[in-house]
Structure formats: structure tokens, C-alpha cells
Amino acid sequence: MNLAYSAEYERFRTEVRRFLGEHWNEAPSGAADSIADLTGAHVRTDARATAFRLLAIERGYLYRHVPRRYGGSEQPGDPLKSTIIAEEFRRARAPFEIMGQGPSMLVPTLLEHGTEAQKERFIRDTLLGTIRWCQGYSEPGAGSDLASLRTRAVLDDGHWVVNGQKIWTSNAREAEWMFALVRTEPEKAKHDGISYLLIEMNTPGIDVRPLRQMTGDADFNEVFLENARVPADNIVGRRGQGWVVSRSTLKHERALIGGAHLTRRTFDGLVMLAQAVERGGRPVIQDPVIRNRLAELEARLVAAEYHGYRLLTLSARGNDHGLGGMVTKLYSTTLGYDIAKLAMDVVGDRGLLAPGEPNAPAMGMFGLAYMWSLGVLIAGGAANIQRNIIAERGLGLPRDARK
Image (tube, rainbow, N blue to C red):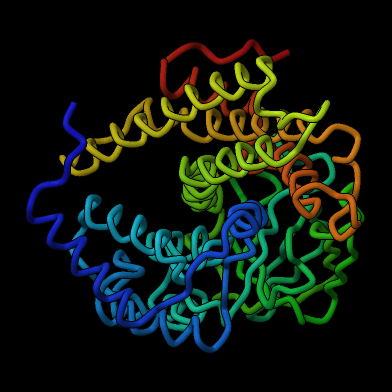
């Protein structure tokens, strides 16, 4: 196995590193930085970060898959160059592509299914974080079985009149827009007759109510829609074909969740924690049981990283990932949960202390990381749903018998 880049790509790496050295200089502060990565604290949208992103786009480093007329850098597809850019931006702690429901999920969906007007209106500002989005998919009784959704939209005088409820809607209070699935043909089979709408959150008739979670925060919300009028041309794709469009969005959501580099940062933070926390007068990392568990986790992590290299090689050769691409989200989120669980075992009872409390180890961030790891197991399709997808679409096994 040869993981070395060619001389051509190493020259490209030098070019990227030189650009970062000239235009961004922000040294990491050590342990706190690694821990903060667990909760996304390094995602910056201030004026300096935005100016840097615009320059990086102009140089062809960010949003390479997005045409220039929509705010991207429109570069030829090259997975190896994209990987080098990501590695060097992470090393320099430089503002990278904004991750989230808008840039990472909606933008590629609009590129595949949106109208020209929708692309011009939404993509540029979404990439820069000027427009923030939430996802209106799940409903009470329609989570893993998303096709059972009951929110309805009726076309009336050039508008969709929407009535229904969405739940577990992340960032709904901060978002300006929501991309949502609604039922426009209730007489059709449940996977048919669903449409994909873009809904402005300040539309009269929309009520957002926060859901308090066990972290003490309210990142999730209920969204009630009562006779909310949405312009007819805010539909993405064809009427009644929203399920097809939504599968595109879910594909990108699973790719967003399954990245091994985020799991690596979580694990590195865990090792630092085990070195810092003492038990019985010795660092916890000297405990043979803890060391054994760390070794097992790192072996699984290295397997995930090398699996990523394999998928990268397939992409570089223009080959489909096939079954290999399907397992990434399930494997990564399960591993992330096991890492977070060991972190809680390392800190013991003090892991229950909230962030900001004086005796909370690592500023209390590992407690948050543990609770979030449970949610990420569900996001983008729960683990049992992922196993069904792998079995049926990847391995060709028959569907479970339905009663």
C-alpha cells in the first residue's frame, strides 16, 4: 500500500500551505482547541473569516464543486486536491467550507434539482453563512418512517398553503429558511405525492417552539405551520417527486456526519483527557484497562481512516464507492459513541458537571460530546435504518417481511 502523494500533488500542497501562511495566521492553543472541536467551536462566520473564505474561493480552494456564477470556485473534480486542501486548512486552523444543513445538504441538492432562479437566489449566501437553514423532515410519528409524514400543502392562487407540524428541527429559531417535505397528493402511495418546498421562516402562520434537551440547551424545536402561504415556485424538483429530491439531501447528510477526521479529533481529545485526569494519584492513562480500551478504539479508528483512503482512491479513479460508501456513517457514529463513552468512564462522576462548573473536567465538553454522540447515531437515519440500507441496497438481501 502506497499512501504517498505524487510530486505534482506535493507541489500543490506547498502552494496551499504558502497561501495559508500568507493570508491566515492563527496558531492553535493546545488542548482547549482539540476539545472545542468536538462542539464545532471553530466554525467562524465573522467578517475576517468571510473575507478569507472569499479569497480562498477566488484562488480555487473552497467550494470547488460549485459554479462561479453561484459563488463557488468551479474547479475540475480532483478528490486528491480536495483532500490536500482539507488537510492543510485543518492544520492551519483556517476557516474552511461552512458545514451545516445549508451548505452541506441543501446546496448540493439545489445543484442537482433546483431551478436556475433558486440556485442564483440561495446558493452564494448559503455558502457564506448569510442565509441559515433548518430541515423540516421529521414529524410526530414520522421519523425513521419518514414517508408517513402528514404535513400537507394545497396549491391556492399561486401559493402552497401548508398545514402540519415538524419536530426535532435543529436551529429552527435561528434559521431564515427551511427546506421541508410536505404531502401535496394525499391520495397517492406514501412515497409518492410528497413535494420538497423552501419555506421562509418569518412566513405568517409559522410558530417555532424550543424543545429542552438533557444538555440543558434547546437546539431542537417543534415547528407548527398553520395556513402558511409559500410561493408556488419555491418547490424543488417536480411536484410529487420530493422523495427523490430528499434522497439526494439525505445522501449528503450521511456524508457530512460520517467523516473520520472528526472522529480522530475526538479520540485525540480523549487521549489528552486520560493523560490529564488522575485516579489514585496516577494519570488514568496508566490504568491497563483504560489503555486496552484506548488501543481497541484506535485500531477501529485507523481502520476507518484507511477505509477513507480506499474510498478516496476509488474517487480518484472515477469509480463508484458501492457498498464501501454505505457503511461509513454507521461505522463512524458507532465509533464516536464508544469514544465518548470511554471519556465518561475516564472522568467518572465529574462527567455529570455542566460546562462552566469549576470542577468539570475539560470544561465539561466531554459530557456534551457524550450526549451529542447519542443524537448523531440517529441523525440521517438511525443505526437500524442504516443496517437495512446496507443489507437491501448494498448486499441485495430481501426486505423484512411486512405484516
